Amino acid sequence: MRKDLKEIAGRLAQPVILNDFVEYGGVAAAIETRSGTIYTGISIDTACSMGFCAEHSAVAEMLKNGEQHIKAVVAVGSDGNAVPPCGRCRELMSQLSKENLDAIVEVKNGVFVTLKELLPFDWKEDLEQKW
Image (tube, helix red, strand yellow):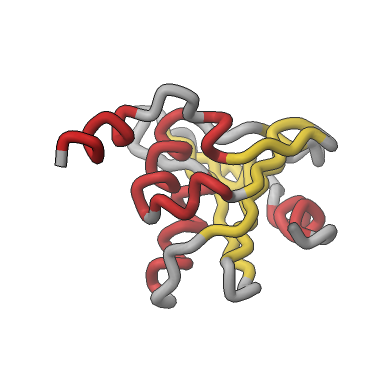
């Protein structure tokens, strides 16, 4: 995991109130792929929950550029602290490639775990055994 990954995400975590219904940038994420490329994203929060997480935004950029294998990921709040990915983000990253279960995730400042450790009872494992 690149030492500056958290810093890269932190520079983007600047919340902006767009209007009465939308705020964006309160959380930013940086994904390092196996190729060494860094993709970033920001959160979008809406009044009716139509927004999305920073990790989803970064994943979209990664996929747009033809990559799917994650080496490391970190999300950072506007306070500069690492925040763990929500369940939806964990699931998205794990479904892109089984290899992503080995991705390193900073879940708290200085605390690193694999994506697999965040999905200890992964439903896909049972499904794969049946196929």
